[in-house]
Length: 339
Ligand SMILES: Cc1cc2nc3c(=O)[nH]c(=O)nc-3n(C[C@H](O)[C@H](O)[C@H](O)COP(=O)(O)OP(=O)(O)OC[C@H]3O[C@@H](n4cnc5c(N)ncnc54)[C@H](O)[C@@H]3O)c2cc1C
Image 1 (cartoon, rainbow, N blue to C red):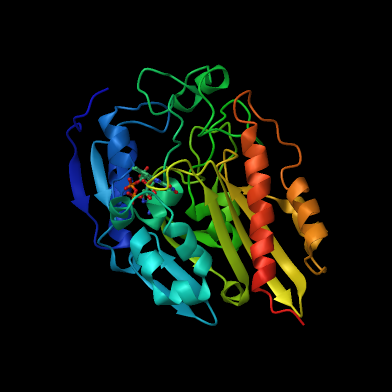
Image 2 (cartoon, rainbow, N blue to C red):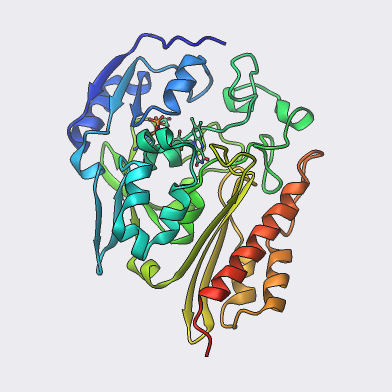
């Protein structure tokens, strides 16, 4: 592997419009950079492929004031700038009090150093952790090749058990399941102004070269979370090998709107088990309109990964993810005041 960064130009954008201008001017030679904790590793390792050209120009969005803010009002809800760092998010009093799932997820990401530099936008747009994708000598599907080396190779940790196709990567982001469970939207800057996409639809199907719907020249400006989220019971659980810095083997985000002990609306979203955050849609029907109890929790946990197809070495992830769902629902039940 090579450990030297290639030569590149660097431009500090001071506004969203300026970043859009530079990205348009430089086309596919340019890339957005925020904390650089992921992008610079990819550049050092010279990973190349369709939509993965080593950039000649990096457009830094970390100094754009509107992308560094966390704002909230009861009408428009919560707005998190894409350049807000993971530490800023974790430490925010507002987030801890009203959208605690985001703080719970952020504080379990990487190390203190990664959370100091890494941003919310970068976390959502980070590339796969699959060791074959990350190695310059393996021309895998994501890099335009014809093989997924992980299928017959090492796939115990960073790979999927459900919803995968040609590529079996598992989505690495911890923020994504938590934000999707809160029904967040992504606000994307384009050369024609901004567009809004539900975060659930921001992530692409497994066969794509990219993991997001962002087209060249587009970037994430902010994440919007409806205010209803602040009145819900919220929980994020993650299992990893080393607590110090590891990615999730499986994670679960649960957001439940309750009224008098009855679940009005629940969202269960999982990470680390599928090529994009996995929304356990079927479980909503099982729970909504009912009171949570031990029997229902067991049934829901069992059903939460219906249709999973583990690879030869990662079947344990199915039991792990179901156990996390069960534990999360049990903890949510404990949060609910009993009559
Ligand atoms: C040791 C280590 C441990 C880690 N552990 C975890 C973990 O446990 N859980 C987890 O979720 N993550 C983990 N990560 C990943 C980490 O969270 C990301 O590297 C970080 O959040 C990326 O943010 P950044 O600002 O540094 O992004 P950058 O490195 O600057 O960018 C990453 C990618 O996102 C793009 N990008 C950045 N900002 C935007 C934007 N606003 N719009 C569009 N595209 C954008 C860049 O072009 C690039 O492709 C870990 C990383 C490391 C190195």
